[in-house]
Image (cartoon, rainbow, N blue to C red; front, side, top):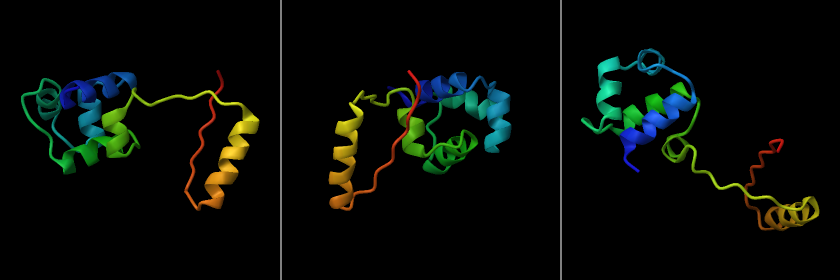
Length: 98
């Protein structure tokens, strides 16, 4: 997916107007518009500012809405966590109600 389209998807998911995102990210509204329309390519620094406005990381910003979701039995999850801990792998778990 094009970066501009992805930026627009995230902004709309957060129910922000371009001017609000621009203010929160310290950017110009017309620049946000150009990014979303694919008329300008953002630098990594710009992506960091935009991600920060949403309290996201740049990778999460660029993958927003495309995260994989897995349903797993709680006993299987505990066994998997024990294995990961044993192998000294950092694990982050987010639990959301269905």
